[in-house]
Length: 467
Image (cartoon, rainbow, N blue to C red; front, top):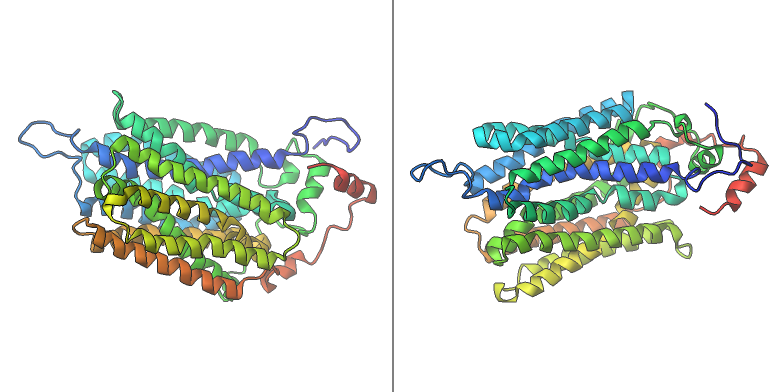
């Protein structure tokens, strides 16, 4: 492969291919999440559109049990796919495997309107395949961070790549709300999402490479930046699963992730239902009231990710503890407060949701960063287990609402809020006790060899170049 020399004058993106990978990867991961999220909104506008005659029931008037089954189908698919995707990633890399996951997501999404019109069981099959594709997301985040992010930019990469939930809701909720109220109907929401995801996954296949050194546009300057201080990352290196599972820091990370993901899934899955059916907001307003807090979350996530990389007056451990506390403890407290706000003060409930979303934006500088700094080249496995936890939350969340919110009253929702608040606060306490930025013992065999063969003149050039 021919590379551009260090002294050759090149364009502004010639040493920034990693940012294009970051952008395309973030959008692709978000598109899978968007395809999963569409049904969370359309279920509130499908009702009344499925009558064939006045004497027949509406096929889209789903009961609480059916809605829970719709959520569980995706959770089961993700649960079954999380570990197989880890194996496929380890054997074949992210380029082809993640593209296949995107293809599955696109096809299952475009098929949902037809499947739902034929039978409820076919709809469940499509949701199951959407869940399978979703099982690929978190391991993809780990591989992109490990292979393409420099140590100094872990916070930035994690903040964007882990923002798929916020990006998906920001796009899906208002777009679905407008399409549901348009002449094209709720079915068009699925076709639009499928078209978007298909387009971006073709870009992924064309641009992404499993190894940055094999990228046709990679320069030696950028490659040195990516590798600096990381040691050699072997392709298809087998993860020491037993040692990872016995590491107490990893369990602290996973416990914090469980609380945060339960909270996030609640807002995505039941935010529209709570705002419309409990607080009484209109359908078209509901989409925006869920999307705007998610947008603020994304803004705070990016800001905190950059700040986590740039702040030098505090140690990495202290920064992670502070960021995690803001993200989990503050949001946990306001989740508890949210359960005691009456319907008459619905605006205060919106403010509480805004504070929750803004505070959780700091999470990328907390347990996510801890996972990548401690697990290093095995981050993809650690983050794939967060994906496993997420699919567990996808199963638990509908079950929790199904068992508690039987009459859809504010008192019942209060119990759900309190459970989430306790999980968040408890998870943060344990994380702060175990947090560290030191690489775990299971990483040291592969990271002992640092990059010592970089010529001094190239190192000086790289250090002086503005990034």
